[in-house]
Length: 442
Image (cartoon, rainbow, N blue to C red; front, side):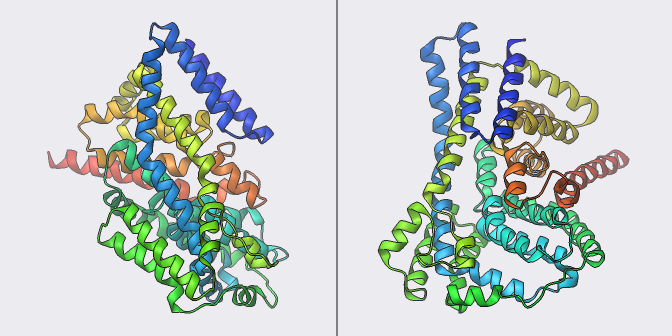
C-alpha cells in the first residue's frame, strides 16, 4: 500500500510539474527520497540504501559518457554545416503538394543523423513549422508528422540517448538492436508515408518565394566535404565500430571541417562543444540551428542519474515485487508483448519522462521475459517498439509535451503521429501471427 501511495504521489508531482513548467528533476528527486524512506522503514539500513543508490549511479556511467559525446557531436555537426547541408538539399527537393509527407521523411533523416527527437524538433521541426505559417495547413497535422519522424531516429539511431539507455539496462549490443529496429519498422514506416501522402494531397501547402535556401547559403559554406562527419559516423556504424569511438572520430572530422571550410577557430569550437553552437551575427537560420553542446545534456544527465538511482532503490529493496508478480500473471493470460505495452502506458503516464518509463518498464517486465525464456535482445526490441514511441503519445510526458510546445501544437498532434502507434500495433500483429504459425506447425 505504501509503494502504491508513493507511486501515485510521484505521478501527481510529475503532472503538477509538467502543468506548471517545473523541471522534472525536482519531482523525480522527491520520488527518490520517498522510496528511500519506505525502504528504510522496511528495515534496510542507511548504508545499504546508499549502496543501492551508488549501484544505480555506477550503472548510469556508460550512458552518461555517451550523452557527453552526443552533446558534443550535435554542436560540431551544426558548426561544420553538416545539418545545414542535409536541410538545404532536402528542402530544395520538397514538393508543396506533399509537404506533410516530406516533413515526416525529412524529420526522420535529421533525427537519425542527430539521434535526438528534441534536437530534430528544435532545428528542422521549427523550420518546417515556419514554412507552414500562412500555408493553409492544420499545424497539428504537420506537428504530428514532425514528432513521428523525430522519434524514428530517437528510437533507432546509434547516437540516440534512449537507444543507448535501452542497450545499457538490457545489457545488449546497440548495433544488433538498431538492426532489429530497422527490420520491424519497415511496414509501419511505409504505411505512415502512405498516410502522410494522403494527408498531404488533401492539405497541400501554399508557399510563396521561399528565402530559406538563401538564408542557409548566407550562413554556411556548403560543399560535399561538410557531409563527411555524418558519412564517417554512418560508415563506422555499418562496420559495428564501438559507438563512442565512432562519435569521437566524427567529432574530430567535424571540427576539422568547421575550421577549414566554415572558418571557425579552435577556441570557438571548444566553446561550441561545451556551451552549444551559436553565431555572433543575427541570422534567421543561424538562430534556429543554434544549440547542442555538453551543457545542453546536463538536465538529461541529472534525470538519468536520478532514474538509475531510483531503479537501484526499487530493485535493491524489492519494492516492485508485487507489481512484477501481477505483470507475470498478466503475461501468461494475454501474452508478453501485450503486457509490455500495457506496462509501458502505465509507466509512461506515471513516470512523466521517457527515461523513467524505460527504467520502470524494464524493472517490471524483465522477470516475465526471463520466465518465458525470451532473449534479452528481443526484450530490448520490445521496449524500443513500445516505451520509446508510446511515451511521445502521452501529452503530459515530457517526451510529447516538450516537442508539442516547441512546435506550438496542442495534444491533438498525437492523432496524426501515426508511426508512433503503428509501430507497436505492427509488432503486436507480427508476434500474434508468428505464434499462430508456430501452433499450426505443431
